[in-house]
Figure 1 (cartoon, rainbow, N blue to C red):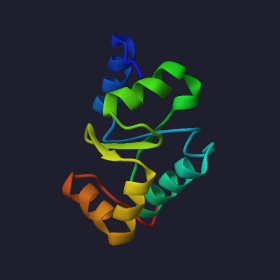
Figure 2: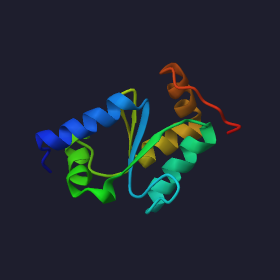
Figure 3: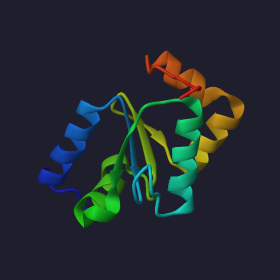
Figure 4: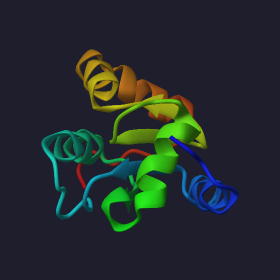
Length: 114
């Protein structure tokens, strides 16, 4: 897995421009794998606003995000520029209530009714 400077800059920009970013396969409206769909569902149930980045649109980002986080799979959740984890970690945090608490502690506004 390699991360060229241009791809690193694109990832840095996404993280700088958005509080919550989910690097995923597909889009939040049309996820292209079960793990991405589950991740979108968890964030949506919490009412978290997030930016979905479709790694299928760009092979450089698809491979680059793995090198960026040193995490081998997608989806990947970032909050305020910090890597949180993949779908399994999100699921554990969601079930325990930790994901909601973490987002709130980071100053992310949640609107579960949305």
